[in-house]
Structure formats: C-alpha cells, structure tokens
Image (tube, rainbow, N blue to C red):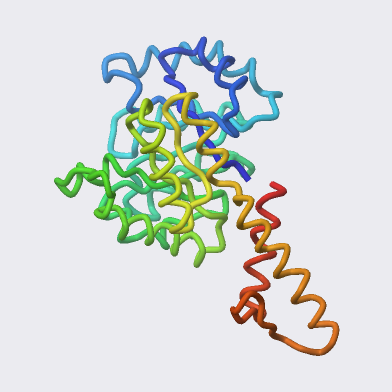
Length: 275
C-alpha cells in the first residue's frame, strides 16, 4: 500500500523520470494546479511523447486531471483513457456523479482516486467512495477545502479535524483502503510536516500527498508503525495467542486488558509494517 504520492508538474515532463527515481511510492503528474490555464491544451499534447515511455515501470503513475466543471475535463479524460496503465486523480469531487462520469471513459483496470476538497465533497464522502468499483482510495485536499469555506489552515489544523475524520470514516465504511492525506505546503518545515503527518495518521490516514522530494523520507517513516508500536503489537499477539490456546479470550498485559479487538489491532500494526 502506497504511503507517499509525489506531485510532478505536467508542464515539466522531463521531471517524470527523476520523480520515479525518488523514494515516492507513487507519482502524480499534475495537469490541474501546476499548469496555467492558457497552457492546458499544449501541456497535455506534450505529454503524448513522455507518457508512453513509462508504461512498464513498477511504480504507480497517477494523472491528476482538471475537475468536471472546467472546459478541460473531457479532453483530460480522453487523454487518460489512452494509457491504460495510468491511474486518475479527480479533483474537487462534489458527489458520486463526478466519479461515475469519469469511470465511463476509463478502462476497467484504471484506478480512480477522488480528491475530496469541497464542502459538498465532504458532505457526500461515503457516496463518492462507493460510486465506482474503480475507486481505490480517497484523498483529502485541505487547501481548496479551506478556500471553499473561506477559512485558513492554522498551525494546529483544528479546522481540518472534521473533514479529515469524515474522509477516513467514509473510506472505512465503503471498504476502501485508508485514504491519502492533504499536502503540507511548507516543504522546508520538516518538523511541521512530522507533526502534521502524525496527526493525520492518528485520525486514520495511511498516506500523504507530497509536493517536494524532501518530504518523502518523513512521510514514508511516519506511516510505518514505530518501534514502540511494533514491540507492543508482538507482545500482544504472543501473549494473547498463548492464552487463546488455553481457552481464554482475554488477558491482562502490562496492567491493561487485551481481548479480541485489541489482538486484531495488533495484527493490523504488524501487517502494516510488512507492506
């Protein structure tokens, strides 16, 4: 399961190969925010030479297209459908109809990542998550969400607690893998990134969008279980499985009760360390 998704400007196709050599688990070629309005069509055409070169790489390549309300959407979708190995990130998803409209153009095996970043998108997060079997996971975009609500991202990110939680819960309820958290815009503030990524992980995210290679080490490390978490998990699994053989469904470990839900949580932590 991918932990880090690195954006690459579609206007700089020469950077795609470099991005694929980084520690990013996946890269996102950005046709949306990274491209000026007047250059959308010319940049898309320039990708026709670059994209085919990467069809056999092992790393995931995602294309972020323009949203459905723009005049660029249809051409973007038709372009993405030409390359079956590309996944597609759809920004500013307001409801399930946006995902369904995209899915009608794509191949069955092309994954869709809806980027939920508006008030409507948050409101209909579950419906978006269940709109198409092609949806692999949701992603959350804080910058456009705050723009939509007319607020700013604060150092404590308190204003993001609700939308982040809603995206996580919707993902779980829909049976999707845990979602991808928003970018941390200040790529030189590594301490801030650590805090933000840990906050997202605590809420249930298991990946993060990145805007600079400097962010990859932190993101990849944060979304793996820590040594303390792993030590606890192995202790729980070992102790619980021993008493289970003896016919018990619970045990006290280090002063705390361990039963099946705690045991299953420990198993999840161990499994995530092996991904």
